Amino acid sequence: MQYFSTNHTSPPASFKAAVLSGQPLDGGLYFPEIIPPISNDFLETIETKENDEIAFEVMRPFVAGDIPDDILRSICSETVDFPFPLVQVSPDIETLELFHGPTLAFKDVGARFMSRCLKYFTPNSSEKTVVITATSGDTGGAVANGFFGVDGVEVVILYPKGRVSRVQELQLTTLGGNVTALALEGSFDDCQALAKQALVDDDLKQRVRVTSANSINIARWLPQQIYYFFGCKLLQGDEPPVISVPSGNFGNICSGLLAWARGLPVKRFIAACNANDVIPKYLQTGEFKSQAAIHTISNAMDVGDPSNFARILELLGPDPSGISKIISAVSISDAETEAVMRDVFERYSYVMDPHGAVAYKALADHHQQNAGESGIFLETAHPVKFDAVKAVLGNYDVIPDTIQALYDKPDFGSTIDANYGSLKEVLLSRA
Ligand SMILES: *Cc1c(COP(=O)(O)O)cnc(C)c1O
Image (cartoon, rainbow, N blue to C red; front, side, top):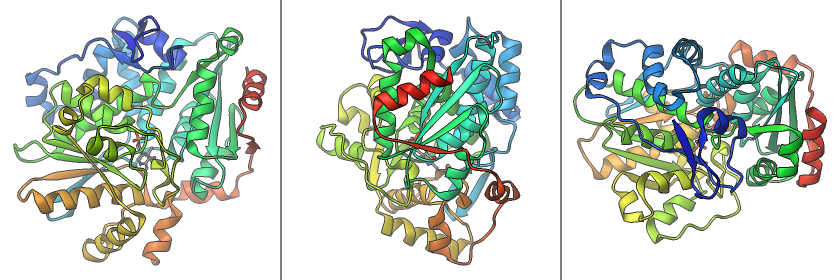
């Protein structure tokens, strides 16, 4: 498979080249030249297939030519070696829980797939690859965990100081080794802008092999399709579901759209946003205006300039009315999020994290206007990761042992100012 740049200036790249460079030098995002259809036969027999088999079939066309089948099989089994249950929350709403991986967020899927691809592509550890990652909270932990101890790979993580939860920060700063965690004085968008600057810095790229592990990178982005197929396998009934996706940078929902474009039956996607409503506004007005990120209790979605927007345009075309045929986008406030977390806990004893709660609320509102539709929302992280859950639900207090243990580990984190020169120095020193 070849990948072109959404800015159409840089030349196309193979899967391997696109993964190793992260982003084309023209500043676009890599996008597959062909949307490989999923066969009806595959969909009709999906209930009989194991998760690792589904993952293999879903990913195979995208890595064709660069990863042999036997290697891809083992990458896929390691990527999805934890449960992905579909859980009934309220009478007409189910949730696909994506948080049973090692760092308790859906980003484990992409990070595990990508780290294993990089390991396969860079067996020669004398030339180091530096993986730079901006995180609004969960990406960093998943990437750090996926790459920790991998020979020949150095990970540099940028996160907005004071704007990630305590558990998220500990997951970044307590590893050490080949993982450098940098708290940046600024927002997630500042982190992402600096990371992007590094990826298009020709001088840096001459001296160091540097790539990204954000959903910019196709090895992070593409495997997120896999669990949409798991959802399809687990759903009862013949009606295609409405799927509500808590969205920030729009990588997750964009993978779902790709799965749908390949033939996965989905009635509609709901892009559930918090106060950061660039895309809901775009669908209303036809104008894409990035804005400064607003700090909310669903902090991993505090993104004011969602980078996967370019891929949505590539998939669905530039016309907002065409996009609206398959996606609705809504903005849910913190007050609404807290109210629905409380309500669902009291009525159904289900504990939602703030991100899942945004998606639940968006789906429940959609059902109000579209009676009889069935829907699922994605629970993207375990509630223990967010301080807001305890603040809102009070008596909820279940801390998994793996999280408890983080509090006793040494802290290797440091801080950095929002200045590209400082970052470049760190990147050069890690190579
Ligand atoms: C990253 C993240 C999101 C947003 O996903 P995008 O792909 O950036 O839209 C939602 N929920 C949680 C818990 C996250 O960590």
